[in-house]
Structures are given as structure tokens and as C-alpha cells.
Amino acid sequence: MQYVRSPGRRLDCRGNILHLGSRTLIMGILNVTPDSFADGGRYFKPQHAVERALLMAEEGADIIDVGGESTRPAGTYGAGAQPVSADEEIRRTAPVIEEIAARTNLIISIDTTKAPVAQSALRLGASIVNDISAMRFDPLMGATIAQSEASVVLMHMKGTPLTMQIKPAYDNLIREILDFLDERKTAAIEAGIDPGRILIDPGLGFGKQNAHNFEILARLEEFHDLGCPLMIGPSRKTFTGAALDLPPEARLHGTLAAVGFSAAAGAHVVRVHDVGAAVQAVRVAEQIVAASGTGCSTPEGMQQVHSDADPSRSGNGAPPTVFRETGRGR
Image 1 (cartoon, helix red, strand yellow):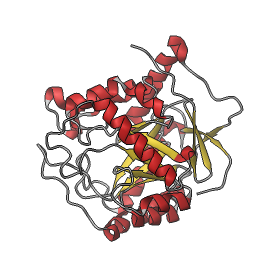
Image 2 (image 1 turned 30 degrees about the vertical axis):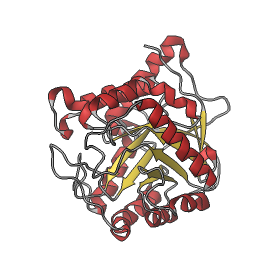
Image 3 (image 1 turned 45 degrees about the horizontal axis):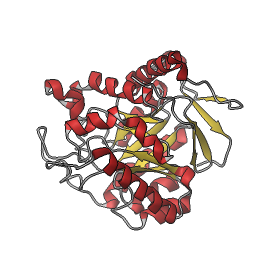
Image 4 (image 1 turned 90 degrees about the vertical axis):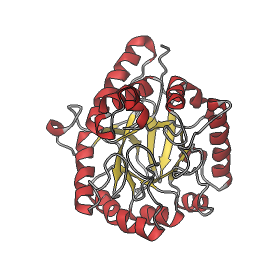
């Protein structure tokens, strides 16, 4: 296997600068929904959601991604999730984001395709918009992100959440995803979003058959050609348990295999449900890459900024660390 050192990238999250490439960052998934495929209903109450966010912080999360609308496709484990209104998304996410921002120094991401939801979250302390539609579903999303100086995750998806898993097919999988992401990157820049605020995500499980997901992972390094930080989200998705037909709650080990492989292939951010386990997986993968002669260390001149988490309760045995430059707060 060819190990890949993550290309150094600089991500501006509303004045908080993340220098990516020194290590793989962990984005913890926080679904405040009653119907998400992996943990639907578990963190639907704001109190439970905030407690979960604080635990993920202690386990080593760098970013918390809060979502108020499930994108679960129809399949073996139930009917597809139905869309909800922007007002309902705001009702679910706003109190959680406000409390997380008040109690942690973590970067907060809002997982939404709706500009009003993004605007609400950004006002309350979020600094990344994770848009699975790559700003296609709401024509106001680009301007909303640009005006707030937030970062954006542009993800590839074939179809919509309700249709994406109906026999998805490609003539040239990687080329089509690369072309799509390049076009959406151009659209984001034309909307006024600074290139230094754009991440890309090839969209594992979003309009992909199992074989497509494995090919994306096997060729992950090709996505570095787009010149943006790379995020990957394999967590508990069907392909991670396909060999044994495992339900979402039994897919941790398959997820960790994909997470470690992604880190070794140069992913800058991995998006996961199980933060503590993922921290351990990526740290081991990073040591393997370092031993191969392509590893890297803390960027020269950067300061290690630790969270206030108790090291004895952290999943990697040490407080979470984010490399930042001092800038305007969220």
C-alpha cells in the first residue's frame, strides 16, 4: 500500500484557523433526530444531546457536527426518513448548538441543506456548514455561508436522500465524483466563499453501492488533486458491515478499518459516531504512516492548544489537541 501524507491545508472557520495535515481531525456526529439510521432518538432531547457532545469532547473530538434532519435511505432497516421543515430543524438544533458553544471551545458544524437553519446555527456559534447537497438544494445557501465567513463541506450525492440508493450507477465513478466536486467548488467560490473555507467529501453511502464505496476508499488520494481539505464519513454505513450483513450498531469494527485506512490515505477529517474508538484508530494509522518515512510532525511555529478535558477520561489518553492560529472568535 502507498501511504499518503495529508497535504498541508489551512481551513478558516470564521477566524479560527485549523492547520490540517499534521494529524487527522475527528468530527463527532450528533444527530438530534428521532429517525437517524444509526442512533435515531437517542439524543433527541437537548439535554441528552449536550451530554453526548461533552462526552465526545472528552474522547478527543475536534469538531461536533449537529444535524436535525435524518438522511436515512429506505432499505433493510426501515423506510426512508422524511424531510422536515427548516423551522423544525432549528427547533431541534438551536438549543443544542447554543449550549455546546457555551461549554466547549470546539469547532461546531451544522449538518443541513437549508439556509435558514445554517443562519440560525452560525448565529449561535457554529462555524462550519456541512451540506450534503453541496449547496444545490437551497439557492440562498452560498450567500449565507459567504456572508458569515463560515467554512463549508461540499459533499457528492447522486439523487436525493429518498432516491439515492435506488440502483445508483456510474460510467466512471471517481471521474464523475471529481468533476461534480470541482464544479461545486467553483460554484462556492463564485458565491463569494473563500477557497480557504472549502472542504470536500466524496459522499460514502450517498448514491453509492457497496463496491462504489470500497473503490472510493481505495482511490482516496486522487481527491487531493482538487486542492481542498478532504473529509470522509464511513461511520456505521452499510458497506462497513456488508460482508456479514450487520446492523448499524454492530458496524464499529468495519468502521474503524475504513477510518484507519482513510487516515493512512491522507484524509484530513473523519466523521464518526464512535469518537473514542476512532481517535485510537487514526493515531495508530498515523504512526504507521510516520514509520513509512512519509509522516509528519507538528507544523513549525504552531502552538498545541489543548481542551480542558480531563486526560483520565480521554479516549486517547491525552486531552484533545487542535492546532490553531489566534483569530476572531465564532
